[in-house]
Picture 1 (cartoon, rainbow, N blue to C red):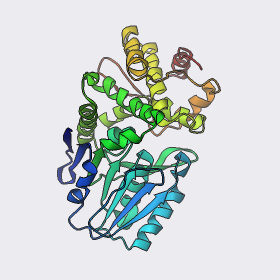
Picture 2: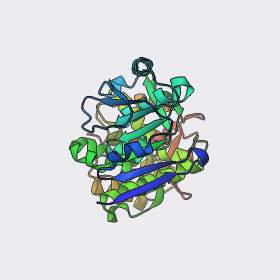
Picture 3: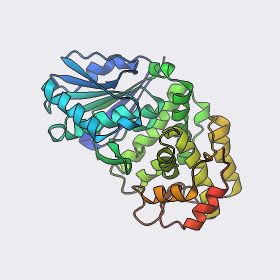
Picture 4: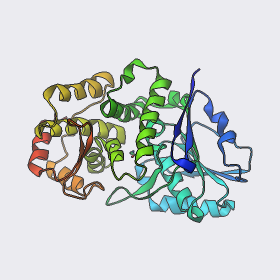
Amino acid sequence: MSRQQVTVQLGVRSYPVIIGSGVRIELNSVLPATARRAVIVTQQSIPLLVETDIPQTTVVIGEGEQHKTLATIEHVLREFARAGLNRNDVVVGVGGGLVTDVAGFAAASWHRGTPVVHVPTSLVGMIDAAIGGKTGVNLPEGKNLVGAFWQPHAVLCDTDALATLSERELRCGYGEMAKYHFLTGDDLLSMDRTARIARCIQIKADIVANDEREVGVRAMLNYGHTLGHALEIATGFEIAHGESVAIGMLFAAHLARVLERIDDARVDYHKRVISGAYGLSTALPQDCRSEDLMSLMLSDKKALRGLTFVLDGPNGVELVADVSPAAVTQALSRMEVR
Ligand code: GLY
């Protein structure tokens, strides 16, 4: 049983991410010393129970992206009020990315900022959502449009939770995991699971430490996400986040090729990692129209100067603005359709 620890280095707001089997039992040791009460935010289906040594109340939120709303935040905040939570206390988010995004945003808002500890139970949560302090909810107009940067006090990635995930949930995690191959070129496949998760977290922690508020390099963590978010919305979330990111990364590779930023071998490398190593589909759903995807991509948060994508290229993966609609259409036409 290996236990690993990564520190997200943010000065006085630095925090540990602990990874390994059974690490949820370390929860008490990572709570803020001031906390006299905890509110656990979780979902009915989450199999991981956490116990703190202080009085705790549990708030259960709905399952599915349709519950990632301001209405859910209001519900959670009113439960904080009923529990008598104050800003020296602690919120604990136990669940996948939806739960930790909601718990984090509620904690950020409560009394203008209350500590939060995350116990992510999905692979996406462990290697992405629970790390780095992005919190928030969706609006009908788009994903994650309302939120706050609120760094957790600590993160416990108990790998026992992974055994409870469905094949599809694991696949979603692989979409985010594949991303780290393109950001670094690291040979992640040669590592065992705990080491690979820890390495992905370390890569993300380094990026966040350099650019907490995403004014620069942090944008690379959104690789594959511009088309990915558009696909999630266009399909009414029938395609899950990690699956959409997988399709979005191959699209980004085709777009980088159209723009002559990378060669055919690099596009093939994307296919080998995304489909070959992680078994993810990279085909566009048949009923998604290019025009609809294009307008969704134009309303993406990153699109401050026209169609904007995170693209591979001679300097690695970086943000590229003002991409022509013709190039996007050409890249979409290179995608398989299913
Ligand atoms: N999930 C992308 C980020 O945390 O920046």
